[in-house]
Length: 228
Image 1 (cartoon, rainbow, N blue to C red):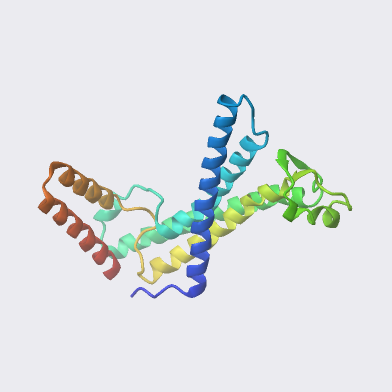
Image 2 (spheres, rainbow, N blue to C red):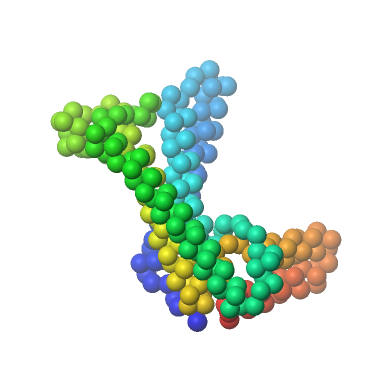
């Protein structure tokens, strides 16, 4: 039985999706603007490269947790799919447990790396990113009363503990869903990819009835997955 997601869960997922989309959009826009500035106006956006790198880091770290939620991560399940459902469930729980252990180790390392930048090295700034005006209040509070000229490093580096914390939470949710039979895996199933390819080939050949049959097959597989 699959329960309806709570409003809080839907709100968190909406924030994640919006953030990923906005980060990707800004990365594309800044990169495009930098290319135009360099090759058309023989100029350069000084902070463009560093901002793009920071956005990419946030995109990857937040996106990793979102991928667990949406079952986007790819894995090898050829042998697992040959096993009976109870045994398959055990292996899925083992996968969750090992992934959770790894994520906890990453969270510990991420926290240990970030914390000095928020305490002892709070004065350290990024190389080129100017301090946004809406964050100007941070300097007088934590930087011995001095304003920052550039963005302090603890702000972009916060992606590390935040991303790993989200990954731990999503893996705990995935484990609960496996236990309660709401899902039977934490990876993207390979048979779905085969069905999508089959539907695309049928459409390219003009055999619309084959395409409809492939799509129906996909829907049936999804329905069977819910029933398990």
